[in-house]
Length: 117
Image (cartoon, rainbow, N blue to C red; front, side, top):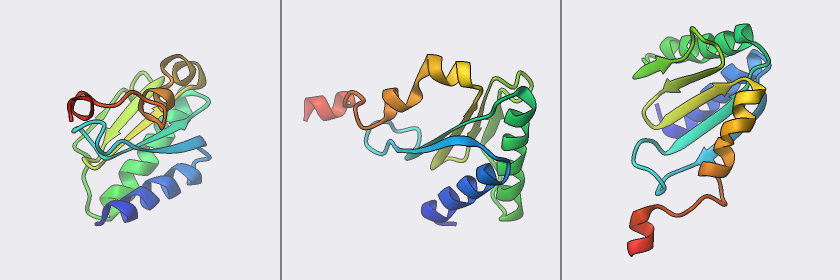
């Protein structure tokens, strides 16, 4: 599956469970761990878990197995690693505290290799 198709699949799965404030960050060139990060808010442990379950089940329907899924048991911040895409599902207080959008978004610092070039 192409990266854009996978991104749309992830977004659709999150929207189906009423994920809040879905943001897609293009981090290609800023890190080597992934190309796209998707950040979404869930209002409760239950919604965080449901959002993760939705993404994982949609991916598996298309024959894609996540490399890893972390943090589901706690339900405050869960991460789904789909290789080209990493999905962060967070409760509001955690999302506000870590502010991943600022860390990896348009106004994030350049990577070290970009500074050297």
